[in-house]
Amino acid sequence: MGMENLPQEITALVGREVYSKNGVFVGEVEDLRLELDRKEVTGLALHQLNTELFDEEVNASRGVIIPYRWVQAVGDVVIVSDIVERLRQPEAGDEEEEVPA
Image (cartoon, rainbow, N blue to C red; front, side, top):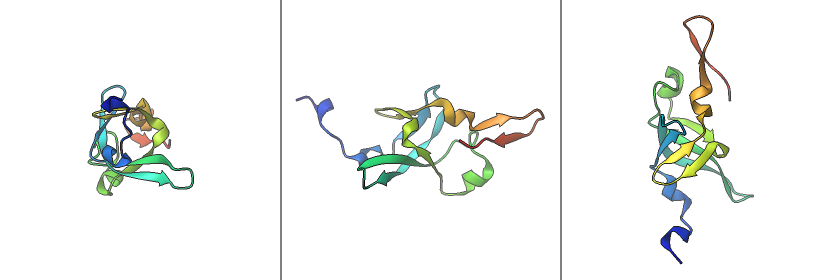
């Protein structure tokens, strides 16, 4: 059995950088949200966020939790769908508003 087939502890995700599938840095995994009854990871708690993706209120807090269903690949880094990039969309004016996911 090769090393790549060995199960890894979920704590191995902590500290990994998170990027969108388009290569945009999102943040770094600080912790995991678990559903203990189903024994599955339901979210990634991120900190050291990309200030261009999240508004000042979010950046002033400890971080954000993104749904694990957004994760597309895990390796040396975590790749998530580009939905993170689409959280902020410009309106008709110059103002940008956060769009709920």
